[in-house]
Structure formats: structure tokens, C-alpha cells
Length: 319
Ligand code: NAP
Image: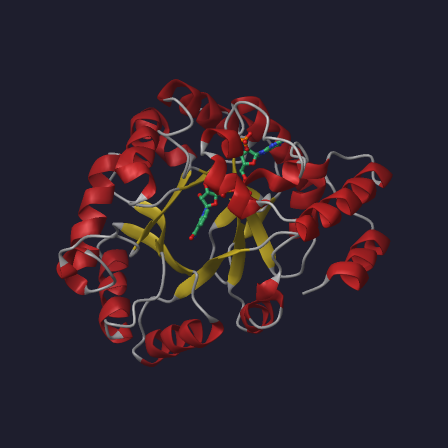
């Protein structure tokens, strides 16, 4: 068994599950990144102690889960696997959403691809207004009772949707969500108004996805230049780059670079450390296209930004 590096672990919400501050996001596994490189990134995750991986049944048409599953065979109990259900695009209405029928089918498929008997953290990927929440929560409760899922969570839920789900589970004495995964980074802070205060009040952990705004906060892009070769924005084509770039964000990025320099840290480390310094934020779900990049990102978990810097950023850029 590999010795797990002493990265700081945090309790996930009100549960006993201990998770690292950095979780490896895998929605690029099997596309921009070859299987061999994905395995190197996964090795780096284990070596650094950032032993939590985030996937979803829909990521790269199941390839992400498959790559993780093949790698995890020999070391299943050393990693925390999180995956998601409910964002399928199927034309068959019973093969998408959060109905009992779809949840049972999709969990079976995920477990097969992951080549495991259980998922550590199972997320509802998005709210489904066409299925009664009671049906969804009862089905999830059954998964936990069967030991096929250890903990449950949701993603992209509004505070009202989260509140409804929590209330139903509580009133029916069902397994309840311990965490929510939402988009959060220095450039996209909308969850600060309602979701963060709600989660803090109810002891629901928050995991931030796209903490580097898909790479914009790496600092390697310039507004008036083509994206560097090999970067996500160059690999995914001009339209994607055109949609992602704008003057306002680039002006902020320049200012964040300056803050990062003052703290003697790189911009990507600064961006992730900023998230981990926010009250209620447990973990940043960071993507990577190489093992070195992921190793670099894990350094952010050990950086504490000065309270003065945190305050200054709020004064200038809060939502
Ligand atoms: P991200 O983590 O903000 O950005 C990842 C990209 O940033 C990498 O691919 C890399 O870009 C660059 N990067 C990462 N670390 C770096 C470093 N140390 N130095 C320089 N550049 C670095 O965004 P994301 O990949 O969109 O999201 C991360 C994860 O969040 C996903 O994999 C997924 O697991 C999860 N997610 C969840 C949802 C949801 O609905 N729940 C939605 C989106 C994402 P290059 O490849 O260009 O080098």
C-alpha cells in the first residue's frame, strides 16, 4: 500500500468522510489527454495525497470512468471515487434524468466502467424538474443501504432545490446530501450570494469546480494572441476561445497576477488557494492535462493567503 502524503484532509460536511483540499477533475480524460497520461496524472494524485477523483457517467462518453476504473483496480481502497448521474442527453426519456429507472441503470453502468462495487461519493449532476424529488432521494437511500454508494451529494442545484431535497430526506428519514459541487472561481463568484451562506448554515460542504476557469486563470493566455499550442483553448478550436475570452476577465486576471506576485506564488496556485481560503469551501476540483501540472496544483492546498489580500480582492471584485 502506498504511503499517503500528509496533505491536509477535511471532513466533508457533516459526514465522517475525509477529503483532500484538492480533488482531481477528469472531464478531459480520454479526449485531450491520452490514457497513458491520465494514468500518470492519477499516479501523481495518489503520490501527493490528493487521492480524490471526480468523474461523471457522461464525461467523454464513459471513457473517463473507464480509465479511472482500469487504473484503480489494484488500489481501490486508497482512492476516493466521486461520480455523477443525471446529465445524459439520451432521446429515450427513461435513460436520462433522476428517475428511479434511470438512476438504477446509470449506477450499474458507472460501476461496470469503474470496475468496482461501490462509489464513494455519488452526485446528482443537475436538478430534474420532471421527477418527484422523493423518488430520487428514496432511490439514493436504497443505493447507500446496498453499499453500492457510500455518500450522496448534488451538483448545480440552486439553494431552493437543495433545500427541498434536504427537507424531503430529513422528513422521510433518508440518507441526505453531505455536499454540493458548484462552479466557483475568482472570475465566477455568483454562488456567494445565496448558495454559500445556505450551505454554511446547513453544514453542507462545497466543492468548487472549474477553479481555474477552465485554464484562463493559469495566466498563460493573452487577450490579443492565439492560445498557446497544446493548451485546452487551442485544442478545442477558435469558437470556444472566442466564447471564453473577454476584456473584463483579462483585466481582472492582470490584477490577480499582481496579487500572486506579492504573495510569491504562481497565479494558478493563487487562484486555488483563494478558493480554499473561503469559509465553507472544502475542496477545489481541479483539472489537469499532465502529471506535473496536477502536482503543481496540489501545492495550493498548503498556501494560506494573507487576510489583507483576501479582503482587498473582496473590496475590488466581490460578486
Ligand atoms: P479548471 O480546473 O478550472 O482548469 C483545468 C485546466 O487548467 C487544465 O486542463 C489546464 O489547462 C489548466 N491548469 C490546471 N492546472 C494548472 C497549473 N497548475 N498550471 C497551469 N495550468 C493549469 O477547469 P475544468 O477542467 O473545467 O474543471 C475541473 C473539473 O471540474 C472537471 O474535470 C470536472 O471533474 C469538474 N466539473 C464539474 C462540472 C459539474 O457540472 N459538476 C462542470 C465542469 C467541471 P491546459 O490543459 O490548457 O494546460
